[in-house]
Image (cartoon, rainbow, N blue to C red; front, side, top):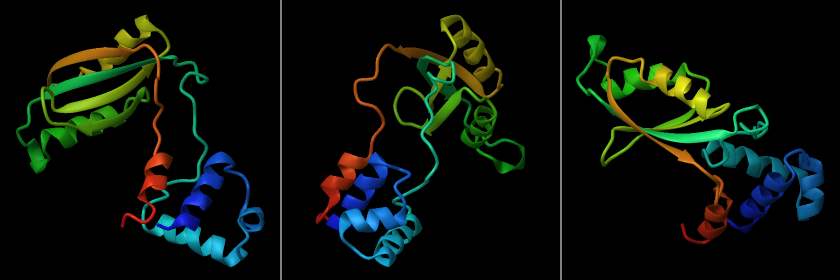
Amino acid sequence: MDDLDVRLIDLFTAEPRVGVLEASRRLGVARGTVQARLDRLADRGIVTGWGPDLSPEALGHPVTAFLTLEIRQAAAEGGERGHDVVGTHLAGIPEVLEVHTITGAGDLLARVVARSNDDLQRVIDRVLAHALITRSSTVIALATQVPYRVLPLARASVGSG
């Protein structure tokens, strides 16, 4: 990535609907350059999507929690690892926003949302309904101090590789 890539990402992050022609005008480069850069950033996996960012809160799910799950890790029938089988189960629950395999006290970390604290119990019960999950702990998020972001990392990466 170079400075133009970062300025392009900055612009599309601030104004996702700006359009290639307007971006080329604002950045002072040819329309084809903007399009080629966007295509290259997508091909390299740096830009992973162009869809709208959605707010769980605005969708009626203001409670966020993190579940640390311990699982039986033996291979299941067909050779799938426990992580994969449980991941498939979790992917079928709409309130599960993301799941990561982790090191440390647990095996998986899941970010979930719920309509209320009472509803969170329903979501947790649904998560725990899989036989390979042996233990869990839950932490409820009270406030977001730093939302998910990658733009500062992109800015810092200019010239570093």
